Length: 99
Image (tube, rainbow, N blue to C red; front, side, top):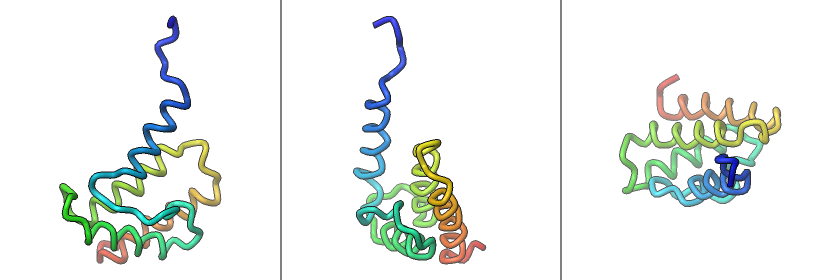
């Protein structure tokens, strides 16, 4: 194979498997597709606080998963949902008392 780049299909599966199969957090189905930033933040907070497998604080684990999803979705994430997820970061900060 002359082209050393991985296929788009391989990349999609990799980031999807990280999001769905995170060893640190058990996420609710479809959490990143919800339209309510406060609901997303509550769910991530609940997942992070319930996890006994995470390697850092609940806040950091929740924020890392949210940031990872936004970054990996990249240009495929529509502007409205990106806005919702960015607002969810603010909500997460508030819910952890870091706003």
